[in-house]
Image (tube, rainbow, N blue to C red; front, side, top):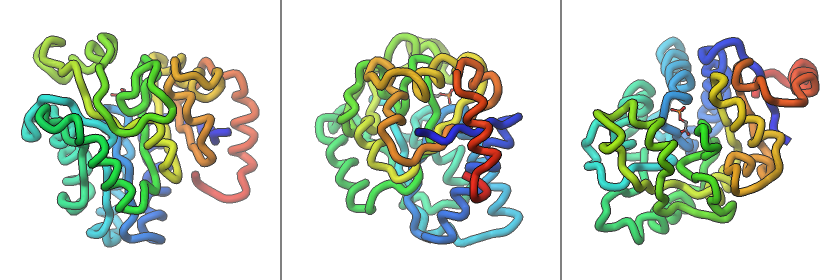
Amino acid sequence: MAEVVFVDSEAAAGTLAAASIRSLILQKPDAVLGLATGSTPLSVYAALAASLKADPIDVSRVRGFALDEYVGLPADHPESYRSVITRDAVVPLGLNPSKILVPGGDPATIRTAGLDYEALIVAAGGVDVQILGIGRTGHVGFNEPGSSFASLTRIKTLTEKTRADNARFFPSIDDVPIHCMTQGLGTILRARHLILLAFGDEKADAIAAAVEGPVTSSKPGSVIQLHPHVTVIVDEAAASKLQNLDYYRYAWANKPWPGI
Ligand code: PGA
């Protein structure tokens, strides 16, 4: 089962996750990071950037794969995930931009872009740690409800709910692309460690379904129950619909080693 860790703040979640990623990079200087976009992972990138500033380590060989990309936005559009990942992670962490890859969102190549991206992940030796948020629809990456647990990187159609959630980054919902390229749930399952973060009560249903609900493609986050090494970091609000809170707290308090 997933390790479920409760935090008081997004900053505390960021500190925990960043410590784990830092330790990974120290052990494996060419570590492969799975990078999520959106609001959720910002505290992780901020904490890791602060840690690297206070006590620098060599990150020049770190590699990264973004989870997803909009189809049809030019790469230099400020809301393309290429731009977002550059702004939120590559620049603040001082990563080598040439080692950070994003699925191709060019409509001209979308039929082959998924398989090409999968081949690059395999050639890199797979993702060591995948950072994940979760959407109100229960999606991870942009794997909307109904996505196959065996799915690999491919084009998906965004739900209206997801487009409405992401409209805050665009002039209007009509400007939010309808399609995306996203790593599949099968791609995510291949990563060696998943760190899923969620904050706020609007994520409580999705977290309960992911951690404790039936394993079903109707709740794509429930794919984490099929993975052997998952850490879920949640605040009290996002955790509010979990049933086994006492056990999670007990397991964390008695963990034989510190950190995630
Ligand atoms: P958010 O999005 O981090 O911006 O809440 C999460 C998601 O949609 O996966």
